[in-house]
Length: 297
Image (cartoon, rainbow, N blue to C red; front, side, top):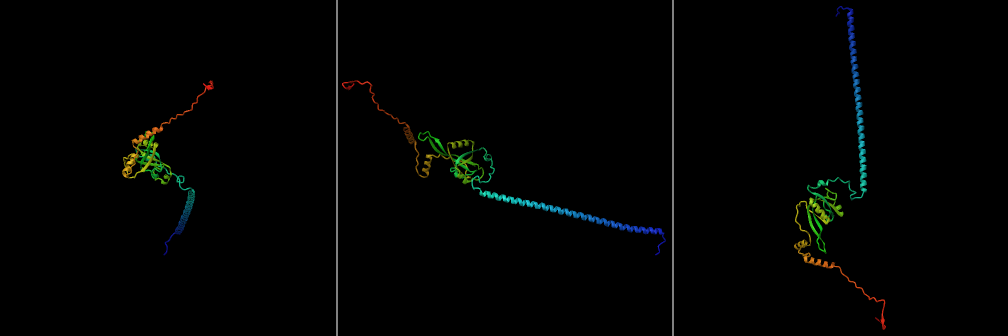
C-alpha cells in the first residue's frame, strides 16, 4: 500500500522517535534488571550476613554452655572429693561420746515450754533413782523424798522419813535436753541427772527445801493417768501395817515405853564416870629428934 505523501522531515522525526522509544525501552529494561540484580545481591549479602551472625551467636552460646557444663562438672568433682575427705576424717574419729556428735542443733526456749502459771526448777537426782535414767522431757512423774526429820530423841535425834511429796509433775528437761527423746545409755552412765520440773510457785520452794534436807526419787506415771492420790508417809508403822495386811508378817516398830527405856539408858550411859584417886601420905618427920633412954620421944 502506498504511503500517503509525507514530508521527509516528518518521516525522519517519526523514525527517530521510534528509535528513541526502542532505545529508551531497552535502557529502562536494563536499568530495571540492574536494580533487580543489585537488590538481589543486597538481600543475598544481608541474608548471608544474618546467617553468619546467627552462626557466630550460636557458636558463642554453645561455647558458654560448654563452659558452664565444665564448671558444674568441676564443682561436682570438688564436692565429691570434699565429701570423701569428710567421710574419711569422720571414720578416723572415735565413735560415741558428745565430742563425736554432730554440731548441736539450736534448742527451743525453756521459757516457752513452761506452762502458764508454772515455774521451772532444776534439781539433781541420782540416775538410778530417776527411774534408772529412763525418763524423757514431757513425762509426768511423782517425787518421793527421803527426809532427815528431827525427832528430839537423844539416841536417835533424826528419823529417816519417806513420803511422796509431789505428784503429777511435768518433766521439762533432762540436763540440757528439752524436746528430744533421751539417750538412755548416756543417761544411765551418768551418776546424777539435772531434772527440770514445771511446778507451782509454792511447790518450787518446798521442792528446794526437800532437796537440801534429804534425797529425791522419781516414779514414772503413765501418759493417761491424771490426778493425785492421798498416800500415807512411809515409816515403820505404815510398813508394818501394810505387810501385816498383805503378807501376814508382823513387823512391830518400837512403842513409847521402849523409846523411854532407850532414852533412860542413854541418860545413864552419858553420865561421866567419877574417879577418885588416892595417894599414899607419908608422915614427915621433924628435923630435931629427942631420945631418952635410947628411945625416941
